[in-house]
Length: 197
Ligand code: HEC
Ligand code: HEC
Image (cartoon, rainbow, N blue to C red; front, top):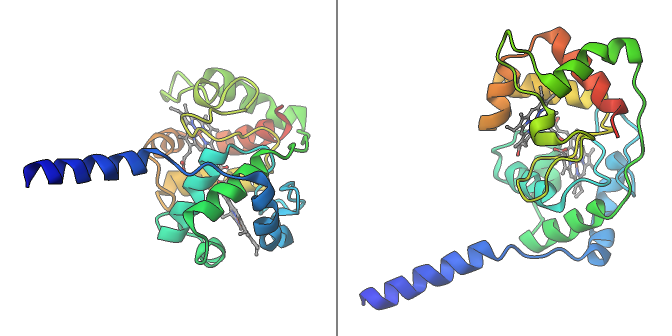
């Protein structure tokens, strides 16, 4: 009895660890419904819709799972994920990850403070450097599910940082980071990130 239970637990554990690997070719077809807002190649042209091109598959899957579960709250994305299976999410994630991200541009003057924060944080408020997790060129870290940020629309980045700050989007690391940011620091960081590559 006890042995069977342990065997079952090991099996559940093993299937839990073996995350379905995405198939980018299958994902391309499944992503057709996303093109209206994110564009076919994931390089959204509209600042409120995030660019997905070049984003890590692992991070995309995590976000889609959270939208579907309602733990990341967005009415549009709740609807868009309702019918997606785990395999669909992995395939779509693999497809967008395989696309090359378009490069954005930043106003150097507006981005100056953002560059300092991104690379060195703010010692006075105890704000960590963004670079520590998101990387010097904003490429993030696929294994750790740290998203790629470089080239992202500043309007989207500003909304996310404010959502993390208010707690309406939850993530232990980013809630702590955003809580230490002023509006001016959020605006400047988002401007710098838009031009980062
Ligand atoms: C009607 C417009 C619309 C459509 C269609 C749409 N999305 Fe989105 N998507 C959004 C918006 C708006 C957000 C940002 C939500 C927020 O502010 O948190 C978003 C966010 C996302 C994110 C989070 C990105 C990040 O960097 O955290 C992913 C992943 C995503 N969408 C994937 C998809 C996929 C896959 C589809 C198709 C199955 C899709 N979206 C269809 C509007 C749309
Ligand atoms: C300790 C690691 C860490 C540090 C330092 C950090 N981040 Fe993050 N960041 C994360 C993680 C993890 C996520 C993904 C959260 C999730 O899964 O929803 C994230 C997500 C984000 C997102 C959302 C991206 C998207 O596509 O929706 C933005 C924007 C962001 N970080 C900006 C920043 C900025 C700006 C700084 C510096 C002031 C910073 N981060 C510092 C770990 C970090």
